[in-house]
Image 1 (tube, rainbow, N blue to C red):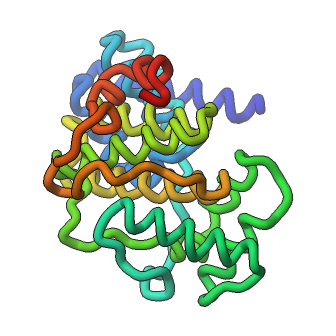
Image 2 (image 1 turned 180 degrees about the vertical axis):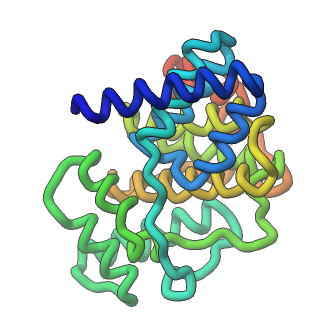
Length: 259
């Protein structure tokens, strides 16, 4: 613990120097673009703290947030998509598949593939939601079982982002706790930090957030979600589940969990 604290203190000093020499924009851009594969680290705390630091505008806190994100960064494990689940045309289709195929397989002790078997075994193992979430997200075979969103479903497109909002809010509404809340505040943070990402790294960050959300969904036993709020990529649908206030103000989601 002492060594970790010393490492973070050194990193804080280094980031302070980068900010002083190159400016805030360059420092934040360097960090988020290079660590896009780890936005889930420590339950998304890195990007959440960094987004608040950017909003705050104080160099000392920005350096501390960059150091915390850097030192706690943990990339997703590599996995083979070809061995995983089929593609899904929408978030709703992907999460229905996980509910029907993986959750059912977990209950019946059967699975149709090695990746599905890994997911069902991790879901059935003893432990709390947090332990299961970490176990699922850290297993490449499990990640391979999560449906891949079809190539023409651009996560960075505004309409698709709106349905991503609906997804994380629906998850929080179905099972309100600190873990599901962080799927909301974590996505909010990515949107705050979007100007600092490259286009490619922002898409990667969103993909990691999708996988993190899916892993958490599996860990909390795939509750029924109301995801029929429009079609991905078109921004259709009405009702508060597609309201960007859930991301523009994290407190809005706390005060309106089921509205």
